Image (cartoon, rainbow, N blue to C red; front, side, top):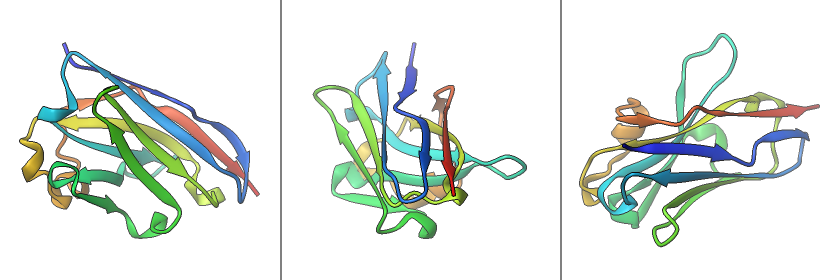
Length: 129
């Protein structure tokens, strides 16, 4: 059974940094597309970042470009999201998710359309001004 567990969330002041981790079990990253998503109160869940094309590319939504960095450690079966220069509008529940796709065919639209098969329970990130 595929399980995803997020960690590393919390509360920070604007301009601060956090690193989220997603530990996966029940499968290996080598057979899945991985991404980070978030959902703020009253808003739809959106794709934030993802690993594309077998790890040769990345996806970021416009609002986090230059501030967030997604990476994965296949040996540890862990996905990371390094978040810097955090802003109050980054406040949301952050979710790790996986799609059962051949990694070489992980494309941005999978993240943008939230076409994922497995989701973590989410972790809260709060940024105060």
